[in-house]
Image 1 (spheres, helix red, strand yellow):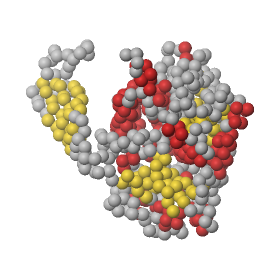
Image 2 (spheres, one colour):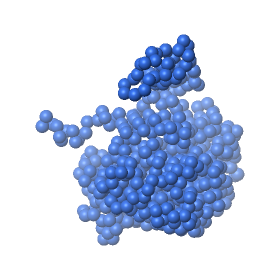
Image 3 (tube, one colour):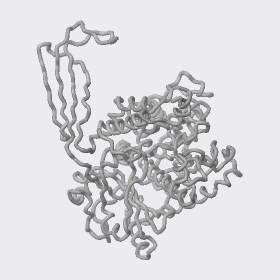
Image 4 (cartoon, one colour):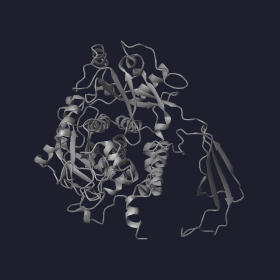
Length: 590
């Protein structure tokens, strides 16, 4: 993708950050509020309090004309509703995997009530891909007794002192610490050193308050209101997920995770600019047919590799041409589409924006693709590696940093390994590379993600960087005002909110702590054995994420514990599954 003229004509890129919509009564709309939560509607106080937290940036007023074709103001929605050109509003938010959850509202009731928020069940932030209710989340639950866990730590205390410490949290979590004298010569395993003279056994026993899966509030972010041109007489709006009682964003909701990092960056005078570069495989089978076939033996759109191949891509215009037009009419500016390296694999690129707007576009893009494919009797997949014998599908992240006036902060006159750049660029790159191993589940969130990282596959296997080198995990492209970092790690299965949040948290920490990047490499990084390798499995990545001091400092314990538990349960589910590979290998032979 050409993320060109990053500092150029900012007026076309919608460089506003989401915020403000839903905070208090909207002019011309009934003040009646939705009875959204089981304990009553979200109060004006809570809405105002929430509005102040959505973003530090000032948002465009809903009364202004929309700048991007397909985007709507509230007044424009009211006019289209009066003309009976819009009769439905699609209210959506992201779950952990980036799927859209939500409701369809009658447009009149949306204008009367839904514009102020609606409700959805909290369990949507705790279920797996198949909507199985899985235990062990502190965020919400049945009345569940979590497994007993113990953490051993060592503390030098007076050897005659016995300490029992009990703490009760709002969720009735019991923390018990017991200090026991130990012999001064006792050692553990191959620690190679003597223990201090006290052993502290810490037990955590969580008895969650009986919640029964209540509601949270979904509050429309009115700056995301758009025509859903691929649907009949429908508008679309993205919602933030909010605590009904406090009016604060639900910290573990994916958009909240990114919004928190955006606001932290803005407090330091920075804003992230980026684009996500999605690839996908196309099939002539419908989703229903693919399901009946067990997702095997599907008919590809191509019968030979069509990377940049115009004749082959012409055959794929049945879907791609429709998508370019529908996305553009739905407020998502299009750059181009092209064939990719797999059979029936393609890439369709949209214009860069601030990272929050880009993530919103990304989520709408994927849903639009699936719904249009369904309408045409076809299917697409955004799996990272749907076929063992072919290249996987990526979601390369292109990131640049600007100040709050939109001025490019990566361009500069310093030289780094032959690249003209700024100190800000150098440290952002250093932080991003250093912290990537700790945050890999945010880039590669599924079991399948890690099968994409293979030699000679166009996916990286090393956390190295280089100028315009597609075998490196971090590829530096552009120059001057278009200088940017392309991270080639995320697959098409990544949740954009979490991936961009990880990038921003890492890069900003690099700037704050002046982290220097590793030396640039050259040549074929698939043959490199000196740089840090990409983790091999989701299990390995989740363990490091859970234990990462940086992840906890950047995102908070609640976010890290929540997602580490979510990813671990995905690993556990996979470990219990009996696969086709096992049946083919062992059915007769063992």
